Amino acid sequence: METREPAVTPPPSTPFLCRRPVRLSLYAFLVLVLLLMLGWRFLPGLLDPTFQKHIQSKQVIVGMSREQVLQAWGSPYQTNITHTKDGIRREEWIYEDWKDAANVKHRYLYFEEGVLVGGWYY
Image (cartoon, rainbow, N blue to C red; front, top):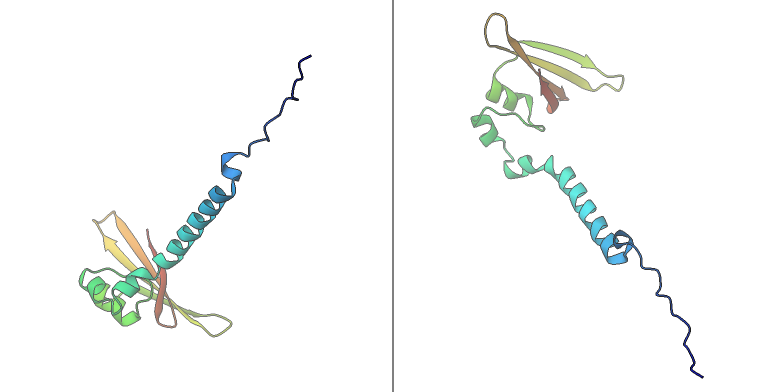
């Protein structure tokens, strides 16, 4: 009489993305991307701490002072000044770019306590 060994079922294989080394690699990649996104904002200031290259090329970036923006772009068409309830001085500078009599583009810059914090082009 022949004896049969019981059929051995292989252990269930885990999906590729659920394996520990793959998960750790993905988490490390996502952390790296997050750090790069956070550091990207400060990178131009680290590469050009006095903003002289940006001023010469007529560019403004976050972190510039009012005087540096004036050197790069000149004086604005209009300035709006407000204060928050905490006493922080906020300024909105509006520049107008006239393409012709019918087309006007606007650039907006926002300052808090004399430092550029953002802007947009419309």
